[in-house]
Amino acid sequence: MTERACPVDAAVREGVIAIARDAASAILAVYAHDFEVVCKADHSPVTAADLDAHRIIVAGLRRLTPGIPVLSEEAAGNVPTAERRSWTRMWLVDPLDGTREFVKRNGEFSVNIALIEDGVATFGVIQAPVTGLVWHGALARGAFRRDGDADTPIHTRRCAGAPPSALRVAASRSHRDPRTTALLARIGDVVPMPLGSSLKFCRIAEGGMDVYPRFGPTSEWDTAAGQAILEAAGGCLLDPQGRPFRYNRRDTLLNGDFIALGDPDLPWREWI
Image 1 (cartoon, helix red, strand yellow):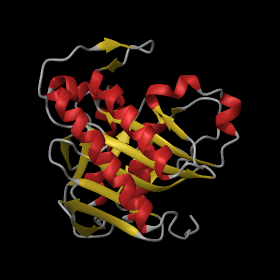
Image 2 (cartoon, rainbow, N blue to C red; image 1 turned 180 degrees about the vertical axis):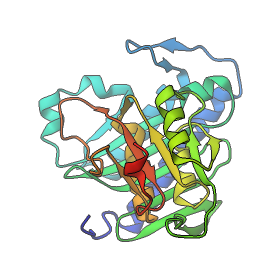
Image 3 (tube, helix red, strand yellow; image 1 turned 30 degrees about the vertical axis):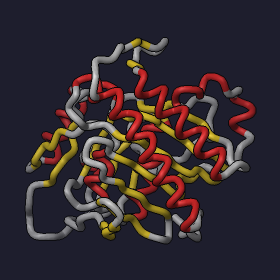
Image 4 (cartoon, rainbow, N blue to C red; image 1 turned 120 degrees about the vertical axis):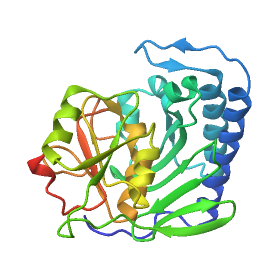
C-alpha cells in the first residue's frame, strides 16, 4: 500500500496513550473484585469494565480531537449507518477487547483505539491492562512497545526463505475451530501459541509470533488498532483474496476471514 504521512502528531499520540491507560485503570478496578456478566443481543458478554472504559475513552477522545467522531463497540448501535458511512475520519474503539478472557481472569485482554482515514487504519494503540504494556504504531512512522515511559522500536520477523524453522502461529484460546486446525496442518512445522484478544497482533508486530489466521466473524474494532500496529512494524492483515482490510466501507461492521502475517512473503495462499 502507498505510504502515508504520520496521521497524528506527538500531542495526539501521547493523548491517546494516556486515555488508553486511564481506561485500563478503570478496567483493573473492576477486575479486582467480583463483577456481573451480562449477555448482549449478539450473545457476547459485557461487564462494568467494558462500559466504564467506553465512557472514559469516548469522553477523552472527544476532548482531545473534537472534530473526529468516535465509534465504540459499546455504542455502535446508536449511530445510524448512513451517518457512519459519511465519516472520512473516525476513531474506532474496542474499550475492552477480550471480554471472555477478562471473565476467565487470564489477563489476556486489551484496550484498542484506532484512527481510520478513508477506510485505512493509519494509527493504533493497544494497551494491556494487566502488564501495563502499550503498543502503538502509525503508517510511515513505525511501531513501538512502551514499557513505563520508554519506547522500544519493534519489527516483525522475516522468515520466508530463511533456514527452516517452526512458524509460531497464534491460536486463539476462545475461538479455535476445525478450519484453523486444518490450516495448521497444511503449514506443517508450527508452534501453536495460544493468546487472547488483540495481543496476538502485538506479538506478531514485535517478532514473537509469525502468523494469526482467523476464520469466522470478528468486528472492525477487533482488528483496526492491531492492523495499524502490525503494518507499521512490517507485517500485513489480509482477506482470503490478498486484500488489506479496510474499515467503514460497508453497512455491516463485521469482518470476514483473515490472516495476519509478520512476513508478507510467507506462502499464505498455499495454507488458506
